[in-house]
Structure formats: structure tokens, C-alpha cells
Image 1: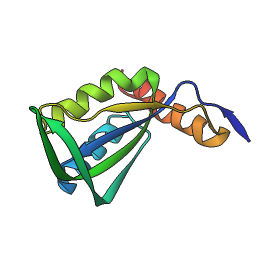
Image 2 (image 1 turned 90 degrees about the vertical axis):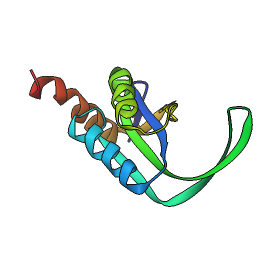
Image 3 (image 1 turned 180 degrees about the vertical axis):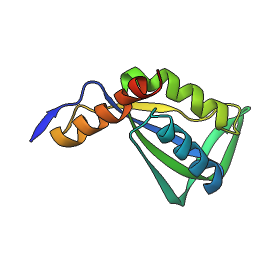
Image 4 (image 1 turned 60 degrees about the vertical axis):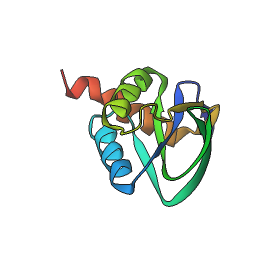
Amino acid sequence: MLRKGGGSRVVLVTCPTPAEARRIAHSVVGKRLAACVNVIMSSVESVYIWKRKVERAREYLLVIKTTAKRLAELESEVKRLHSYDVPEFIALLVTEGSKGYLSWLDESVMNARKNHK
């Protein structure tokens, strides 16, 4: 059964190394800023503009599941741990999803406030 996912977000972050990707994933889940992070261990090739030049890099993608309420704290933690001057942080709205999964996601990040008071 599907439900509207208005408060749910999927955040994309790329990292230069698998170690950095894992470190960020463990931190944000451990702090309950995200319910789940998929670390894509096959590298992606990124082509981008940096300082007016076309650059290319091999990166590792994080797919982070969280809620809109946790986005600001999640972004701060990613920036704190990330080695890039301007890390990718793109939040996508989840319009619908499995009722059970989205409920679990909400509960996983909401419990952070209760557990850390």
C-alpha cells in the first residue's frame, strides 16, 4: 500500500573515496539524521565545472533517506565531515512510497530527539 511521502527526502552526496563515503554514512545514521544510507561502491564518473574549468573525477555516491525536518542538520553534518569545499547535497522530494517503509523512515529519524534529550 502506498502513501504520500511529502515529508520524506532522498539526498544525493558524492565523495572522493569509499572511506569518506562510509564515514559520512555511519555518522549520519548513528546521529539519526538519516534512516538509511546506500553507499554505491562502484565509482561514478563526474564531469563538472570548477573554477571555470571542466573537470572530471571518480566519485562514490551516497543515497541518503531522511525527512525534511532533518535536512538542515544533515547538511551541516555532511559539510563538517566532507573534504570538498562545496560538497554535493541535493535533496529530492519523495512523492509516494511504501507505507511501511516511509513510516519506518519517519520513526527512525524522529526518535533521535527522544533519545538524545
